[in-house]
Image 1 (cartoon, rainbow, N blue to C red):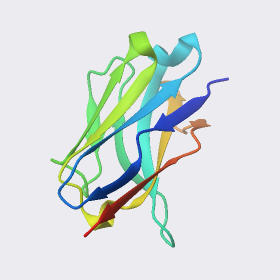
Image 2: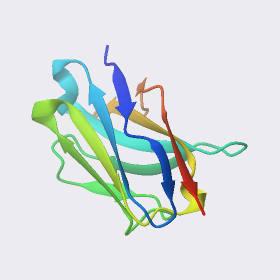
Image 3: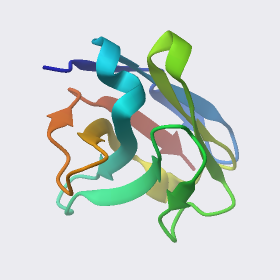
Length: 119
């Protein structure tokens, strides 16, 4: 079982930056594809970014390309999301998720961290 705990959310003005962190328990972290999703009130959950188990490949949702960067430190069992040039439409609860590289579904989810961007 893997537990994920997000941190780093908060209130920021448009154009500002935040870095989210997701700390994972368990030695199998380095075997997992990790991702960030977000969900705004009244909207469906949206894919933000993911990163392969060794950090060699990343993918981004169209809404955040060029502004957000996902990274990981397997020695620290942590995945990060650097968010720059934030916009009010980035306001959402951000969730960290993990899955084994051998499966398609994300089995592990954090509790979420709120990001609010004011205009």
